[in-house]
Picture 1: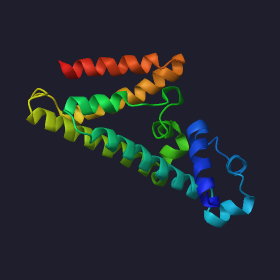
Picture 2: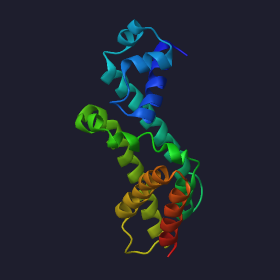
Picture 3: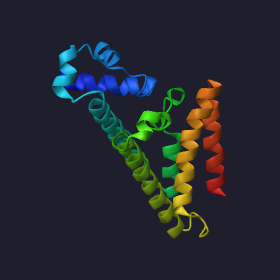
Picture 4: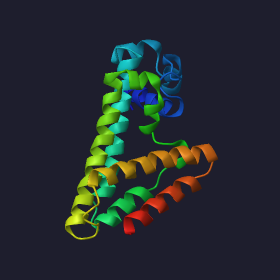
Length: 184
């Protein structure tokens, strides 16, 4: 792995663990095993490196969502697969966690890939709900945008509840509740 890749991967992990404020250049260098000059050789500074890391994380999260949401199956089954996919629930979402970081939220540049990724996932789910309505699987009164927002809120809120309780059970309970509402 190249030095720039080690820096990006180390920053991704630290952002997930500590957030932007808690991710110091020193911690990045220690985690990556790179020398001090390496960071500034490849990146303008911490924000530039963090942006590269956030973009990479966003791309991976979107690719995972697309992979689950575009498999064969009914619209309900695809949404269920997304909700039940393998996750490290107690670690939380690497993108959702960034929305809690005041420095990320205050920076249009750092916040953009986070917002764009969540929007793209929401659009995918809304499209699946529309497809389900057309097939008669979901009632005509169901709003795809609202259901998509609810799916994302269930996932992100599930992470929070699971972390707070120290158990993935809270996440699973939220998923089961939403799925029962979608079935009815």
